[in-house]
Image 1 (tube, rainbow, N blue to C red):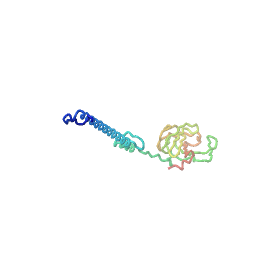
Image 2: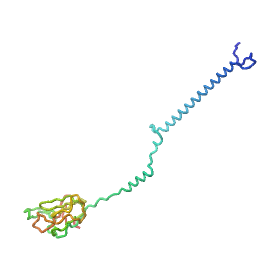
Image 3: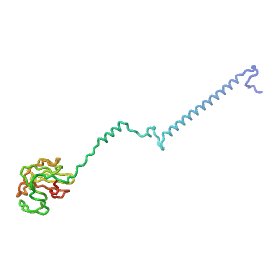
Image 4: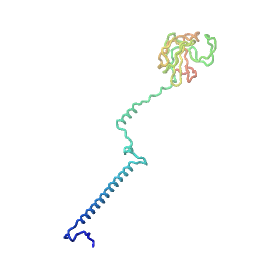
Length: 230
């Protein structure tokens, strides 16, 4: 018969040392099993939370660092006001209207009309088209711009004296020949009636009385100035 019993009868029915050893081993086994179960549950919970967070931060297969990347940035009220102010301060400047009518640059009679057919120039001894009109006036009289424009040239010509050319909106150009000198320079902006110079002489037309030789071009073609006077 075995000598190992949970209760030692020879000890008056009280538990022996073997009982306590067995009980201690059982308690240790229960503690180890409990800790192992707790540790597994903690790791499982952590892994589950991490996987859920990664899934929440992934959009269409692209990982984002935070939800702020998914929300479009809304400009602040100050930035919106600044943009609105800039838009309000932008003004549209209307283009200048094309010049279609001209003022007479000097008062006087037209002594030679516009002619595309050749006319005889006594001073030159030849025939040529008269591409402008001649307006008689006293020497030294002020010659004004026929319309608003920009001075594109100021020249001294041996046949036509001082010549001022003014460019206007709409492809029109006016030419003032026979001045004694210019009151403007190339690049100056002029208003209708503003003085361009004083009347002098036209050497090529010296046989005539003192006059202004006035020409008009429209898109590079000479036209009769009288058809444009207002």
